[in-house]
Image (tube, rainbow, N blue to C red; front, side, top):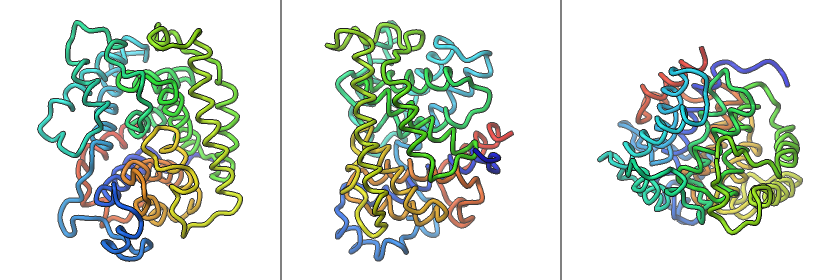
Length: 341
């Protein structure tokens, strides 16, 4: 790795929100429809000009996690119980908010409704059948906050997923997404990122983080905690194979979802967000545009591409005209400044 970049937390959070806003109007559209509506993908503009560029639940839940993480760390050493309470409270507050009107995912809504019942253990709220991308699209703060050990980062990334999405692939993809953001912020070169992620996945393939997850695995049909987690990591390793194949003959003009998946599920959102970033690693705005002009879950794919690009290039990656209009700008900047400091 090389020296860390300047203000990676601010860059990553702004990039995530900008990607979310850019992909908001194109979600659920195929590429021809997006081109007809927005013009050439390389010239796509941030919506809302000259007013606010609105985001979706992806950014809202990222901020909820960020607030909960900040509260937990203000109270001392990050540990499972200290982390769970404020994050759970923030997720429930998001669920109750009148601003939660951006077509949020059904899994998050269902789980947060159950989490709002204070007497219910969080593991009973977790949706073990869902590996939707709603868990890893919000996990970037855990790759950005300073002072965590690798075990804390990994355990908290999985636990924040498990509060809503308890499928082992959602857990593994969340941990892998946080790790990708972390190594980029520490100065990893984009070209080495796929290899770093593969090595990390292989190393952790059968590791069950019992101190963070408790007996969550027992709510599944797996015979052991190791087989439970291996199932999730194998999905991630499989989609990393598809990412490698796409990068052997990179084609920025092609719909990225055709190579690595539409992004509705966790491992595909990670891989397609990575693909958009890695196709254009030094052209962050184009990476967001490519992600937003895709046939799948465009806002989640673009928010992940923005998180990776911002962690790699820092706050200077993004045009001031865009960052000045993004919804929740002040809160994004406040968290970024806290963690960059």
